[in-house]
Length: 216
Picture (cartoon, rainbow, N blue to C red):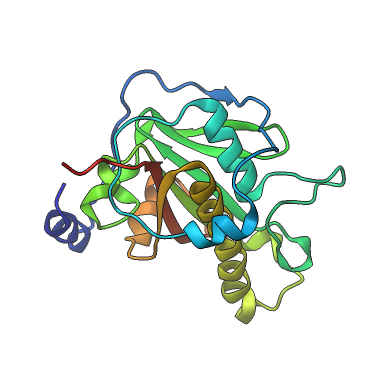
């Protein structure tokens, strides 16, 4: 769907997901992430960049598992994550929008839990490429976990946490040859509706990830 079509539907409050392709599994168990290899940190930083050219090929589960672990997986026995959060609130959830459905990343179980058997990718941003890229990550803050943070500061705290997660994804992508781009141009109301979010849950950012599309 073109950007102009999305803008028109958004203005009318009619930007909606598509039916999922194929069966939507209620639970996708992820293989254990490979925590070794990849580029050295400074080389990954040198290679880090945004790209908007994505092939349609789905990421294999081992690669997806490593990406999500890098984003905000558990890296300590006490439940600590690869991305920081103020007061260890861990308020940012990662939703994974696939053609086969939209899932919530469960870091403790290393699994994806089905949220909706719909293809939400087109709702994750106004850009046309988000519809066809294999995966769009959506970062959602749950303010119910931030009771110790003053209400006026919760959004800023959550955006900082989401930014740390997004940078982890960027570095993983640079290290493994994937393409990615962070996005803030979102119909947040439409996306919150598509994900059936509660009043305490706020859509922050989206991030598209996939294999690079070769340009002829």
